[in-house]
Image 1 (cartoon, rainbow, N blue to C red):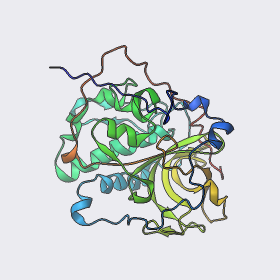
Image 2 (image 1 turned 120 degrees about the vertical axis):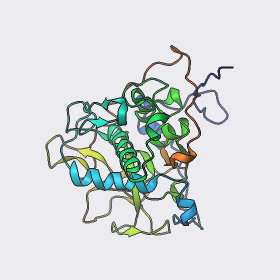
Image 3 (image 1 turned 60 degrees about the vertical axis):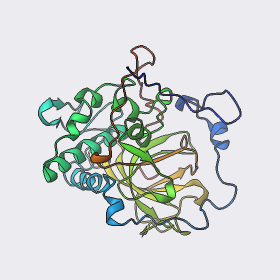
Image 4 (image 1 turned 180 degrees about the vertical axis):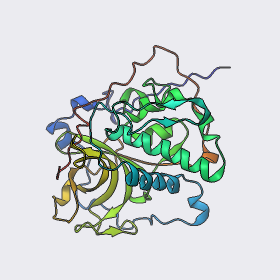
Length: 310
């Protein structure tokens, strides 16, 4: 029996209205975003530290190795919304995922490049190349409902509001509340100016930008890795930023900031999650029937790339 996979769109509680599309985000919808009325933080936040057995469930260590490698080899080569990947990437024996207009790249493509780089490092270190058989190469090239790339690029009709949702939809990840994120998780943000970003979570920060080992009452945001900034080399591309939630203003710190980020427990506004270790991937979903959904079209205005200090 063939199972037909349908990606449904979450509805607002108590209504039959669709959640706002990226193009519909405005000052009015931002003002209506569900944000806690008082303190953003729960009184007793769970530690982001986990024991060795818990860590083995996740791919974070390889994601962080990929971040380090990309930062060392492809840092600040330029941001461009129409470019994908800083370089061609071999998909084991299945061919090459081709870059478009390298070495420039943009934020959602940056997260795909982090994942593909983590694949390579994992396979080389462990000798387990089965990660390349889980999804076909075209899943990192096409933008349909049956393609991981189509979900990473964000498509609400696919029930994907970010990289974390994309990984969950393909059995490769799980939802994780912001307060429980570990370095190497994935986050998609919305800002109060109507723009957004796709990033790799590096760690929590306080109001001076100092890293925090775990979530606590001093946390005002987080450090991340992605591609952002300007097109010129040295002024944009792969780099770190320090995201600050809008309730905390835009405090001075000796790092490039990304202020006005909307905190919310609603995944449509702050999309957070963790990639599972390959041994725990749940199996790729059965293909959806062709024609049920239109391919993803990147919202270029939403993912424009500029952050506060660019």
